[in-house]
Length: 163
Image (cartoon, rainbow, N blue to C red):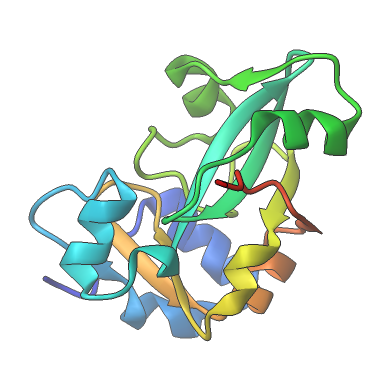
């Protein structure tokens, strides 16, 4: 593990946001951490401390949903939150076109285009969460409230609830 390795676009976004102090805290792993479970294992944290950045299409428009790694997104709740007729997972090419990053490495901010962002309240249950730094090999830590703020996210409850 090294402390460098963020995607150049994400490193630039950190600089533009005045978050240069995060750069030395970025952790790079030799093996990809494409899933929340892989990231949690590599970091040594709880699965719920991973912040997944998931792109959906709401009536054809991309929307980013930030969700803790232990939970699943309830698409019906996203649809209701956005007052959309249809919400589906975005295809890989749409994710890359919208964000500038590949699935498995999408960070919560620093995207190619500005999209609407929803953050599940469950993220706030932790002091620190870990999110992708623009590629599947790199992650960074941040207080969830700060992450929500920098992502310009709306706090919502879109977690799938199991009975």
